[in-house]
Image 1 (tube, one colour):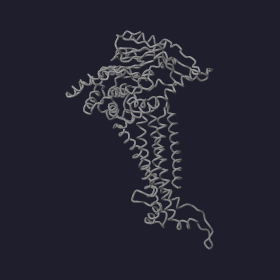
Image 2 (tube, one colour):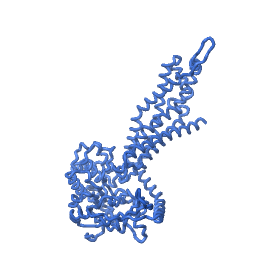
Image 3 (cartoon, one colour):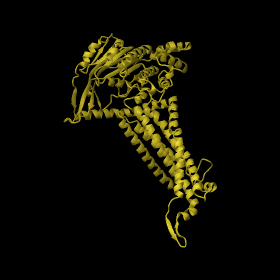
Image 4 (spheres, helix red, strand yellow):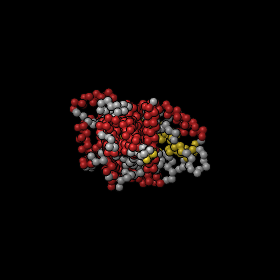
Length: 597
């Protein structure tokens, strides 16, 4: 059902049927997997400037359709089956975007001297670019052209309102320069009825309605040519929902984007502002309606029972499908890796890489510094006390009776014990203790931070991807640098505090020890060369840096795991903590053996 005028659509979906491959239900006698049909062959389109509602029953696959546009879900998947593998059909999702959408949109904002240059550019490249989404790999040409406002809003909790908006502008294909950005911020805050005092507030402190407005402002700052809204009114009261709908429609009109697509169950409120509806019926067929029908009609359709559409997915069909998917994934692996690496390197060149690097250093190195200094002092003091005040038993001496062994050992071997003690602190005890503390404190904190971003209910990880920032490529280099430098520097400073603790305890508990005696003997085997270099400093750096790199990789690995509940987060934190400590111990054992040999 389609009543639109004939013209070249901005989006066109054709011959696209989809099944979800699922394991047999628990307790079921059925051994083979099940293929559940999500929808029949789709034939959908929308014109440039359309405001489209995507309606249908819950769990019918509405969001999945838009996930292909966002590269959140790949069509090459073992859990998805397109067109039952029928090679005679050509499933397609095509986008036709004007190369000059943003140039035309911002033409009124350009300076007078740039008008001639714009006209030449428009004359040279005023044409539509046709992009196929369901190819073997996601088209890089679409990066920055499709934006999404998730149901959870996916605002970055560790950034302020101003920083969230600036992040989106900086990642836009057409970022606004500082002067225009400041003016745009003032205008958008007024339009969305947000007070200026919120600009430097953390988004986690805002109300639901305020967060909704900030998420919409971030979408507009990103300037995508296709805007996707996933249940934008689900968490709002009726009055706030009405306001949000008007703001979204106004944002659509103001941005002059090619297409706005809204996934919603709140169709009664959205229908008055919609140009078109894609309705997924109970028969799993899409109905393309322009103009939309009444809310009562959609209510009747949604009340109808959804027909079952499951079939047995035979082992032969499963093996054939999996083999095809693995072949395609293998062919895509290197190109996808290179494309992701390039995006990651580009994101590391931005000012935001320096912002996050500074914050990581502050939280791992600066905030941990007092703890490690005190721990080093305490460790040096305690180790010295027990080393020189240990009970060695007693022996019977003629004419003297029973005498404590330590009375003979300590005066005789004091200098040798103290000089050896300095080497043990520097080469083994302090760096090992410090790296374990870094793993337990900072490593766990980083795992928790990344796990929070990876939370499927918050979608911050996907938001970074949508802004063209591969999270792993963005965070891993910064964390590797932060942890390696922090482990080496904290260990070195902790050693000096441990030396101070050793000096204090040695002088207080041993009347034979003075500062000069301690200094001459403690540093003897360390063989200092100047103020900051000792014998074994090279291996000291190697041990701490490698341990820091290992802690960073382990923390990132477990933090980047998908998690659906708090229990999974606790499990990842526990695994990261234990694994970091064990790997640190193993590395030190191997390197100490190598150093001894």
